[in-house]
Image (cartoon, rainbow, N blue to C red; front, side, top):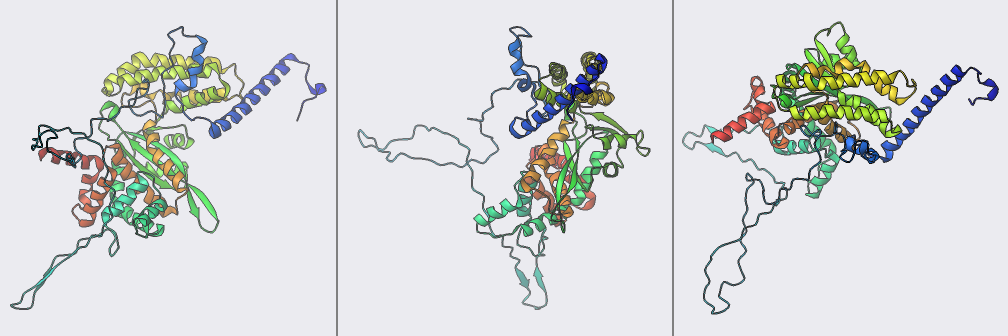
Length: 517
């Protein structure tokens, strides 16, 4: 409703309060419009060099001013704060482990062009180029000869038929593993794979492929549960969640379920927890779901600011068992949005201060937990204390309607959790480990649009957990899943030996065997 002059107060204090309120509301609306435009048309990068590069022309830092260090959840482990370098080319240094196929190109004639005498070979030039042999579909014929005794004509001997993942089916375990890896590790939908198979002259509908995936997940479910239980046995765990649309028969639309991602990774301080991720499919996003998943976990849970985690840590059943550490990148992200929408100098200042923290983190990555804690206490803690003082000082003079106050409140309300890494060298300042691991799910659901049903969601969670954990450990996911399924189907690995198939144990055994050969 528009104001009329006769409705306005004559009290300057009231008018000032109204003006500030309207300015805050106006800034919030402008920020929302700018954010929507950015989502539709703009870049989503949060790199400080992108955000603040245009500010460097102001000469605030003199002629030697450089872009602030990036504190970005898009960067890979160990790269935060580095200047972008040229891409490393693999020209002339092809991997030695790849098989070599030689082709010899002889001259059209080896007779001397002068005297026609036979020429002798005096040397050669060798050039290598990376090549690819197209994938080959073949039919595996299993022949089991029968043997009978002609003397007594009683006994007949025949080898036992090998066990198969799809009993009586038309597919081998290796092809099932290939389709699973293509979908859950590399995000190629079953629809596309059905078309690829059709291009090879094999007609297989999506429903059949889906049944194969379900059979593979049922076989691997025990290993998946063991991996999740093993991860919960460590004292530090990352957690995040993302929505997953699921078909809802009878309603003509989808309903929203959730994928929760649990991750471990102690590589930054060379700790015991391997890099791994386990996805849990659930019907909701509330405290009940996450409390059920973490029923046996005790330790530090590193998460974003979602209220379900806060209520979990504060609940009577988990009181003292679960401690929360929050994500500095999520706090920074709020100021990034403010800077992009309002060009706030203070938001830029906060981004630069957090960038200085990440510059220190880059230097101590890979050191022991004690050394990391020592450096953080002496160098990072003063930076964080100064940042908190600045947030508190600026907070009082800002309208409660502004987007900047919301970013400040988010950080201050979670300050203890945001600074938990200062007192524990085993912790990271952010949840980048799990955010990177949840991206395959986000890309996969964008390609697939939805999961067919809750059973499909569980299948997705099981296979994606094993395959993406293989990727985190530097293992070919298809090779790993093929071997795991074949050992389970054949009985070579029994239920009490499943720990041997956990990808980090599987990899170690393979490397030891290769070294001994």
